[in-house]
Length: 191
Image (tube, rainbow, N blue to C red; front, side, top):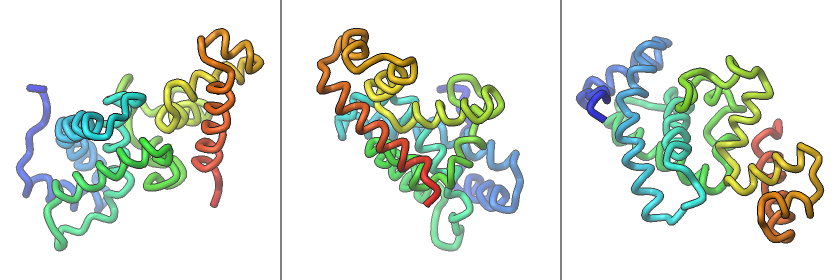
């Protein structure tokens, strides 16, 4: 983490104000400066909440996406940016753990498109278009088992075949499919 950008609290607050005024460089620098802290918070969240089905990178990204999505709500007169960002990131973690990261706090997936993927550094929409965005969002909100079950269903596997391929009981495949479909329905609903 030695290559992390270190900014003072006043610098972060000033960058947040500039980012709210439309300065994308300030926004990107601000999010980069928060990456180390958000990752530490994500590790702590995983330890405390026993959410082993989530990846620390996914949690970190959900925290950064939440900060990016809510950045316009930051008011420097109401307090320190860092304290505000910690609360927003923790909300992003809780929403991801509950399967609602896109629906709550990310306006229709726009923030997911505007934040670079932590694995490849590019926007999912730039890489794969709309389908890539949907898959990227699905990876954020579904547990690994749910994602694998949905992927098997999309390949045309029956529930029994999916259970055999994934080495899961059939009832787990049914339950995971039902849960995943509900999460995706909520995430991509227009309401």
